[in-house]
Image (tube, rainbow, N blue to C red; front, side, top):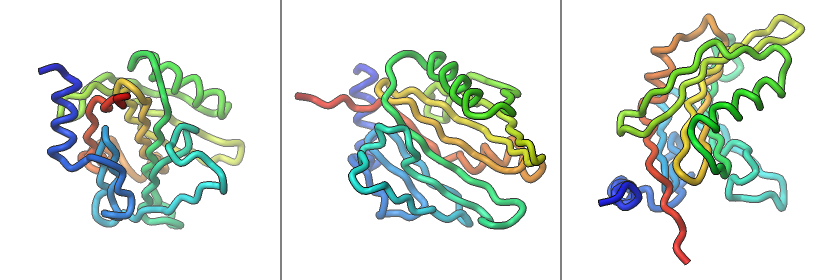
Length: 184
């Protein structure tokens, strides 16, 4: 069985047949991925401007989850999906370039190629970002290329409030398979 058929069967077995944003408030599901935020987190409702594309092709977040919103130790998990053609390494390179272009105080501290528990290859990129007023944030980006899309699952917060083990625990439910191609 080829990878695409195996991935599709796995997605169907997990019930990932379509987006179910309202079915489980702490979950994001689509035909190629599943994520459930840990207990204690809340989903932040996103409102698309009227007339905006609803299929996430604009690179805007498709789901955002918050922890301790408004407090000093607040954290955010943001899932961004956009069409991408290329390789996982190309996605990682483009992501770093986009981050650096968005802020002068962006430093890529570490990048590691690894896999999700189901074997899907990913890059984990640790980034430190600062501003002129002395505010620093740390983000861990899980970058995944599912054959059709570039997926970024970003864990963001203040650097002294969490470590890599906290990130791994919060993103432990992330499951991505090769995106099923549309048939004509």
